[in-house]
Length: 75
Image (cartoon, rainbow, N blue to C red; front, top):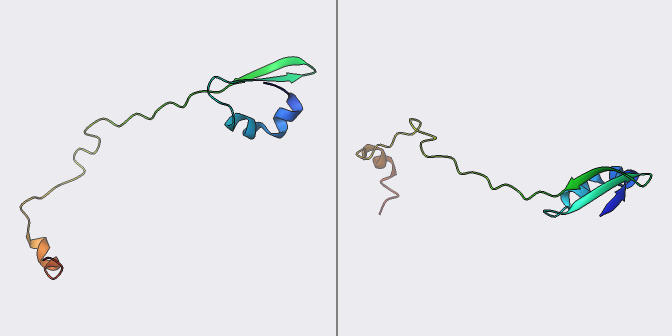
């Protein structure tokens, strides 16, 4: 797609967000090419590695005293 500089300035965000992956947008001034925008494929986010919260959480498995406060809610 080819578009003039004036039109690109007026609606640049719309043009950028509507670019499909691999689609090219050529911006011209007085019919001379100035810039080319190419739609990118979004990069998938990487899952954090194991152990990210190591040492931040303590699990106490043998503590049943805290359950006494909830005795009326338990079956």
